[in-house]
Length: 261
Image 1 (cartoon, one colour):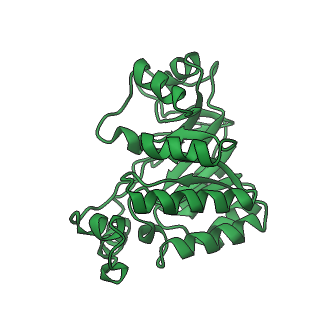
Image 2 (cartoon, helix red, strand yellow):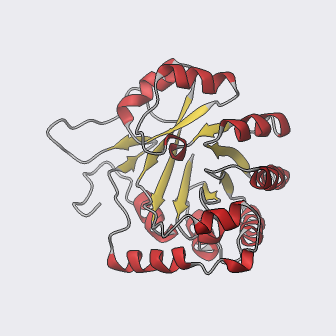
């Protein structure tokens, strides 16, 4: 399964990408603030989900990095809604409390431990992975193919990640207003405006690899590595835009990636 992830989700572009078989589904939801992805926040996400489910699109729900009482309730209801549409393949979590609540509310929906849960660290150790498995996590989002075998060895599945979204953070005000569920009108979407400037400047995305089949294949280096024997079952392609992610999927062939990839 392949999923497209983007900073701002263009629903029309996502529909076109799924209809062109670039991927099976999309990542819905933002780890920091839904208004980064949709101008009207969660209502925009729900509308997008309804449109995508109408064409048989699948979805992963990206849950908040900072979980509060308010966001936990909203996330649980949102996940239940997506599940009722028959399109929710898994939820990406980075908070152990929210993971436990999701396991209780939707025991049939897999939990994927996301890279935002590691925050500044690039990896987690075996003890952490075992703990996550004990609380119901069944898969890990992983950017490094060399770690796939070790994760599988601990009884967890892998969601391979290609590409990276870099966020512009102005202050913690946008987090506190949204997460404390206070005055949503106070959100001026300044983060998105700055984000668009970064996109225009072409400095927002670092793509470290491409997909080959359902494997992750990274550009040739001195110690070139191609994941062959222990592939990821699922791949998430992150790019600045849905079109960019779809292009990476379309270019997933056996040839070497272009230098600009």
